[in-house]
Amino acid sequence: MDFSHLPRHVAIIMDGNGRWAKRRGLPRTAGHAAGAETFRTIATYCKDIGLEYLTVYAFSTENWKRPAGEVSAIMGLLKRYLLEAIAKMEKDRVKMKFLGDLAPLSPELRALCRRTEEISTHYEGCQVNICLNYGGRDEIVRAVRALAAECAAGKREAASICEEDLSAHLDSAGIPDPDLVIRPSGELRLSNFLPWQSAYAEFYFTDVLWPDFTREELDKALADYQSRSRRFGGV
Ligand code: IPE
Ligand code: IPE
Ligand code: MG
Image 1 (spheres, helix red, strand yellow):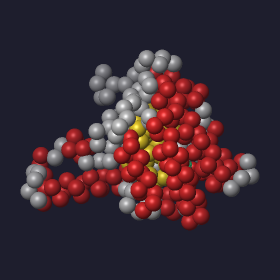
Image 2 (cartoon, rainbow, N blue to C red; image 1 turned 135 degrees about the vertical axis):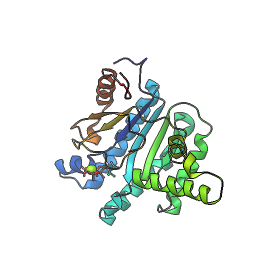
Image 3 (tube, rainbow, N blue to C red; image 1 turned 90 degrees about the horizontal axis):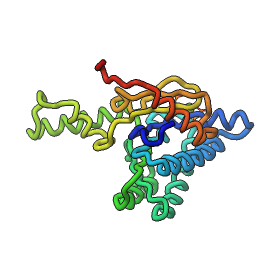
Image 4 (cartoon, rainbow, N blue to C red; image 1 turned 45 degrees about the horizontal axis):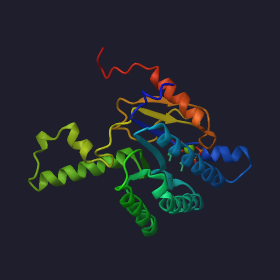
């Protein structure tokens, strides 16, 4: 793997926590706790190797279908993670941003997300985007609503709306599209993760469950990415 030719933006669907726990005879929530540790390790590694953007799928708009106990355990882990991250930000200097509709989250969690983003504005370097109550379709619908409102207010002509306009109204506005999307856990699907932004991404799937995902696994994915030929429709 060539560290001088890294993708700018890597996106990861952090999947397989529940199965990891089940195989050990542990409750699913233990899998989520282990997954949070893996996230810490991988985010630090991405910063250390000089990656510009890491985006992770932490909670989808569909994940509310899970039992209330599991949802609240995930929210509790998120809160703990953010409190610790805020305390260490001065040292870590990792920029964090949240993608997704934060409105349905608890006011406490929302305030922590805002605080994390505020502190992040002082930092340069690796940006970690956390997709929280994120759904690609939901994100596109919210962007379309905003564009429609601008048209209704006479600020924009419907006929002049272009791809860049839609991109600029997504939660990911200003962030380059992911070059590489990684999904652990053996599932071969996108599950509503960055569908617009991943239109030309390279995909890497592995059977490794997210809590078992290591720096070496990321290196493998990056090396695989470097062996690909991206043509973007050209020759
Ligand atoms: C991913 O792990 C974490 C979230 C969706 C929050 P899962 O909980 O989906 O783990 P599996 O897929 O059941 O193993
Ligand atoms: C996608 O995983 C969401 C996250 C990892 C946060 P899921 O486990 O929710 O996806 P499906 O249900 O297997 O498609
Ligand atoms: Mg899953």
